[in-house]
Length: 546
Image (cartoon, rainbow, N blue to C red; front, top):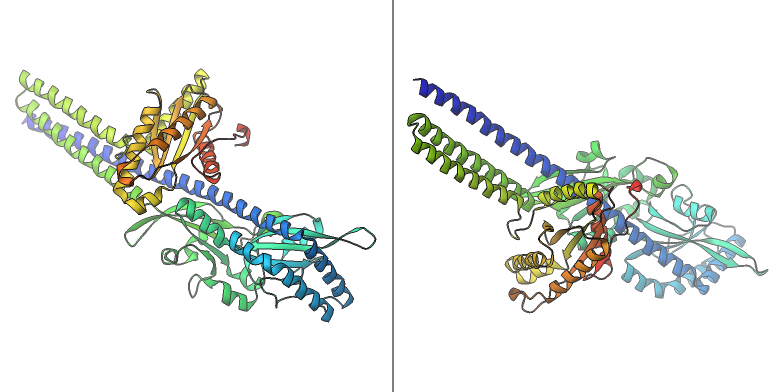
């Protein structure tokens, strides 16, 4: 009876400890997934900001290029003089004649620029304030004043400076590049004629981000801003409501499927002022939804807190969630198997209590430890490549940062991303793509030393930690890896060569883990933008600016 009672008590204690193990493991796994999604959301916002700056700079370059054409300046100056003589506003016959000449002068070069740079607006404004002289994209609309809505135009004329930003106009909402235009008077003095504006849609930004990341996007505008700014015919022609009773208008959209997933902007309203990423299930798929406020030029430069709208980014995380669930299943199986084995051993120990049983216990304990090591290894390693998975690579790297801080030893990382890998999957299939990833992982193991370690950071992206390696040597290793990848021949690719881009960063001894990795990722982005199949070293800012 005592043995039975002891067995039941011990069984209860073991069961409680097993349940605690499963519960803690589940909580930790869920928390890790949330942190990973949040970090990915921050990285997507960073990607968005970089692309936005690039597109805005392109618009500014176009406006500067056109504004410096002598014929354009002369016609615009003549049009301004004619408008003043004819009483302002839309002007009269002479103004209309010069306006038509200006339109015919810029149209031939404007059409190819629209196609090459995705520009869609070319607008000549007279100041002070904003008086529309010629909309090349809508030549029948002119003579209207926009002093209270086109703040970027008003500021550019007043400050006599180039400006960039997002603003909603009468015809379009878009990203603007604005350049003051100067002419020469008969007495030789210079005159500020007006400003020239070139703009594009947010659709351009969405397409560039999708090409790089595969992330779908949606840009929405507030109903109040749209109705107070745009002409009714422009609203009906250019944009549409998210749903029939929605307070949001869709300005740009990468894929109509996004509208099915994000049915109402009201659901995001409580969080509209912050960057937020959350998980959303739809039609058997799992998505990470990242959204953040959209501010126009006036809000960003005049200190106004009114939002123009909201940007939503949608990432397919079905594979990540499936891997997360599989890991939970493995842990649960491990807990059940461990409980059953321990129960059997406990029963045998209490029932027989012999030396032979002790031998059995030792043997079974060894098997349990081996089983534990097996599942531990599976939880740390990427199942396809055998490299560290994302989470464990970060943990190892953090440990090496602590060690480097104590010993003052150099520490570098490589961020390696295979170029155009999606086309390999699309052309040759996922089995061939997996073979490429396995082959690249083996090349990495051959190139780096035994003391270094590498991980599969996600998809076709790999990270490599180089211990006690200074920046110059790290760049050399990166070039050596590029050469090995260039020579890599995968049987399933029918002779097609694989290339990669690598970003290199060295720890400055003070950066956080995320800042250190972000440096390498930024360098990788520069390598991609620079033509791919190349190595770029991170231009690290001082740590106090981080």
